[in-house]
Image (cartoon, rainbow, N blue to C red; front, top):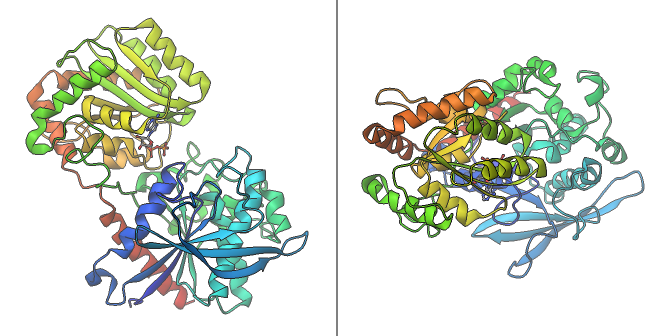
Length: 490
Ligand code: ADP
């Protein structure tokens, strides 16, 4: 049975291009459009109606935004009812709903480092999103929530379903983009908004009133942003203490890889790179390498391999492993450029390496989107030694730009990069999060690099991969259908 005219309530803390901090914004900005663009052979004649709801953050630029109020209501709170309002707007032709109310303070950043503070805002937002569809009498087949910020909506809906017909046929899907962010500190916010702890005691005791664990407990289905990460979440190494609980839900856990915005990331049209190129004109790519070397004040040298890292400076990303690993193979012929900002200690580690090897290593500690593009277009290898990686975009962007990935075999890295072999594969993988093992993978890559014919094959295979959202949108659509159908049968 297929449900025609599927209605999906899609709620997230951020969505590009309106408001972006990290990868979640790319997903919430791209997936709803990709779903809406699916052909009617897949969706049926009535298509799919995806309503994206976001907090009306102060960071959202109001200057050229036309928005109109569409709903007003109150949300219960221990200190008395809190008013909420929803505005409708269009972003590049796509309708988006913005929730405002006192807990979504205009001057507050999108995220602070304190989930206690953010919990007040996001619990309000989660409950307001549910109230919004009720107030407009738009009953969704699917509630699709993301990460801890919108998990309270999943939990509240599951509690509500028993005594309200409005959500009786709404199935819930919770997507995990980053498991370790559980929303620790938001316990009292949940309580103040009337959300009880897991009184059945199915969660570990410490997690019974935390947003993400409660979402994981109550969602009809859980998915991670790659198949491997979905499996890894159920292991002690990656499970953030919830692996045991997640194993009890393994039949309701799956993975769907994030897509890449293939228009924005296209070496044929990218305006930030000196010379555009494609698989047909790959030889022209080396001009980008020469220009990049000049920009970084490295002497021009087309032959010496240029390694790159473009990353948040975070323990997750294995910056320390890379620095130590490169130090171990400093005697080999290579140069490296590291672009990243974040943890000051990791920034210092990278700068120390550059100080030890000033002619080999160049470090830039800022966020620079255009420079990142010039690096993808000019460097020979992109290094991604992550400790864990739910999906990861850098390796996909690298492949699309002919910059061969050297990655740790975890999460989405493992699902998108194939190990080089004679005439096959798109990059190099290593297993252990250990500098020597990383260095060994880089050495293997350097070996293959020395044979330009084999290297070109690697680059071309990477550039030909299809990382578009279309395939993932089909998978989400099929999952929505299955969940909605199962719910009707409940
Ligand atoms: P995460 O979302 O965990 O940071 P991803 O690999 O999914 O990791 O996405 C990282 C994105 O951020 C990529 O597009 C990468 O190019 C970009 N990026 C990371 N650090 C920088 C930086 N310092 N300057 C420019 N772009 C960066």
